[in-house]
Length: 389
Ligand code: SF4
Image (cartoon, rainbow, N blue to C red; front, side):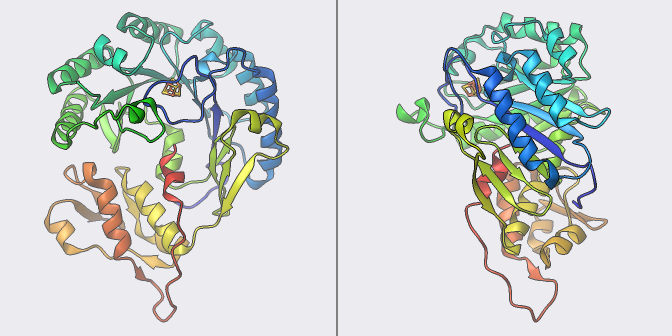
């Protein structure tokens, strides 16, 4: 968890989408004529404001959104030229089936090394329910093009617990995904977020038992195919973990550029940008909030992020950063939810689906590593920052 020079990532939010999906709560713009060049200028300007906060060169860049594959490759190349990532850096881009105006080879030539494909489902009924304009043929064609073009890694995003989706239908979806031999899978259980079309028509969330059965089915099927869980929602073949996302789960700093982007600077400051795309374009500096979490809030964040990863929470690093120590409730060990190993506290296979609740339990039993000094108050409003990526 300690910061080393160059061990930071850069997240770049590209906000353009053709339509807003009914479950989406991200900051997106559906304007028909995105001002791509002006947006690139704003991102580059923002990086020039932040550059000196970070030492070394980024070891990863992630173009997320929105739909970055709607952005002309030359604009992404211009942003990459400004970021100047380290040699061999992982450069990821999200791409959606049906939202690719130019061949993927143009993005590879612009410097993209890893693709994250928003497949979501190969089941046409589920894709329709999610409001995705693509067919399963579009998704398969994009996967085939990605493999032929030659990227270092190709990841699939998959959504489960969609209203009306049965366990059998999801298992068929998993079979379809595995048949296409992905290097990496990110798995998201659908949540009904406020201010989305699903929330407005009161779409019911999936039954908890069904949610759990689908998650367990995914873990089993992916693991049997050699795609192992290395974070609660992420699975990879050996050598294909997302280096960028590991910055988040290992609590390393990252820069966040673009509308609505969040960041965690090396000095421990949390930063957030204005969400509105037009306001971002017009701002001399798009920052809208800066916060330095108090030790207990920081410890909670470290637990919440690091426990999600198979490596677990590093006791010594947490104490060095917060002055607090993890005191594991023995009942968590007896219940088979947590193990302690070599200075790390880790979740077991049973504990993984309960990661957030276990992080809460551990946060509530943190002890002062330096007795005699009164505990500091917990600042609030930070949890969403870590959930954002
Ligand atoms: S494509 Fe992704 S970012 Fe765009 S509206 Fe749909 S879910 Fe949101």
